[in-house]
Image (cartoon, rainbow, N blue to C red; front, side, top):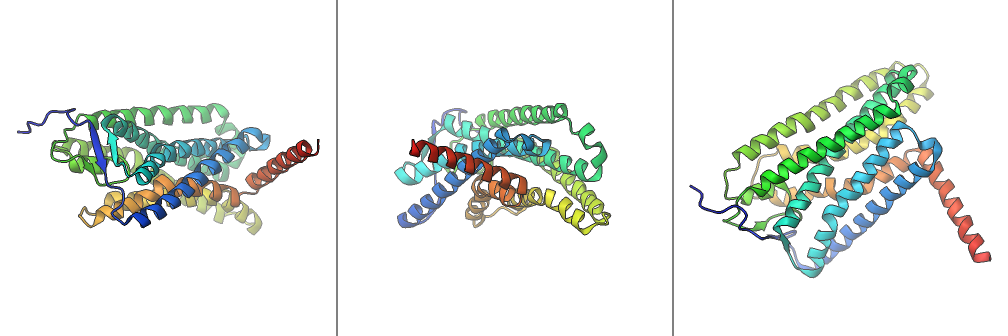
Length: 318
């Protein structure tokens, strides 16, 4: 019988990286650089999509959504981690931990739903091009966006409330650089069988279903592309979804490996490294993937840069 009272813990103690102070400063510099690139790059994508009329299409609508989620994602985790390394104050309050966990769940689920919506958009564009404008209307886009925001919010709040009901008497030390569900369950003195079952059901309903939908969509997309006679048109069709494929692989690859690999003490540091991919590296790379491989985005960026430069030149010459 567990006599530990729920809610007695007021703060947790995080152990981000087991290394020397010099290495911590190097890690701080690296993460600060990634955070800066992620925020600036994604905000630039949002600005370009909003101010450029020819980017007002479903594909870029979902890209704008993805960039918005990525900004929230990195801002929810990295500033606290950077402050922890800089000040060496490794404590985080119980409420702040639950808030961080809530936004982590929300952003992770939203990113999965957005990537799935983007796959559906590319599937319709390539496999049913004549019906694209009839299927992918703005009404459909807003319904999809509202649906995944509501579902992600409901799921994140539910899981965070269930986590907050766990008792933490044996240890308050989180062996991670942010409040993630698996390290929290590992140090909980409560029976976590129900939580593990709920997470498994969530993985099947959200992550696995979405991944299977993505896989089937791209199998059919590739088949449709191979049927195109013109090599130029085939290349154009493939390039329109290549950026999305890269983002899907970057996001799902580390996530699937981390959640499916067997648990061991030696895997804790591996978990931290894998977590870096989907909480820092992927949000940082997404703007580059979608801009450097996309002529429309590059053209809009050059146009905006020219306008800003001309405005600055005009202001200086006055």
